Amino acid sequence: MVEQEMVNAISSGDSSAFKRIAGDDYLDINANGTKMTLKPMLIEILNFKGSSVNFSEQSQRVYGNFVLKTGKAKFYFGGQQVGEVYYTQGWVYRDKKWQFVHWQGTMTKDSLQKK
Image 1 (cartoon, rainbow, N blue to C red):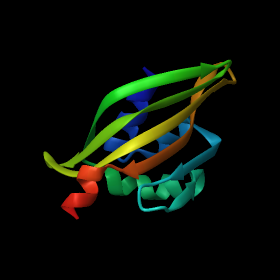
Image 2 (image 1 turned 90 degrees about the vertical axis):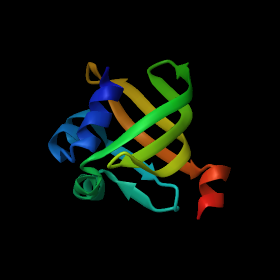
Image 3 (image 1 turned 120 degrees about the vertical axis):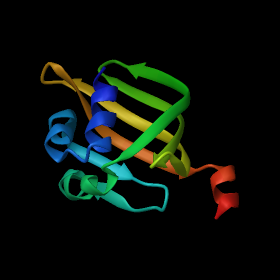
């Protein structure tokens, strides 16, 4: 459920909702190699308003209170696909809730060929 809340926060450009879900130690490394911590992500999230994502090929590994989720994500704006990545998400259970602490995306071969 919290993963869907994270997606909804990003799709609506809601930095307050994203901050409630993300850990203070959040780290993002996106498909173009840009590294971002929580504070700049809260500003950047406004650029994702109106986007949607379709996850596939998902799997997860659980290490105590830490979960790594992997899969493929296709991103859309206005119904048009604008990107496709293989991703890794990191989630940690602390302070009695799941916190989103990591995202890393790598462009898929198909996505690179479209460029």
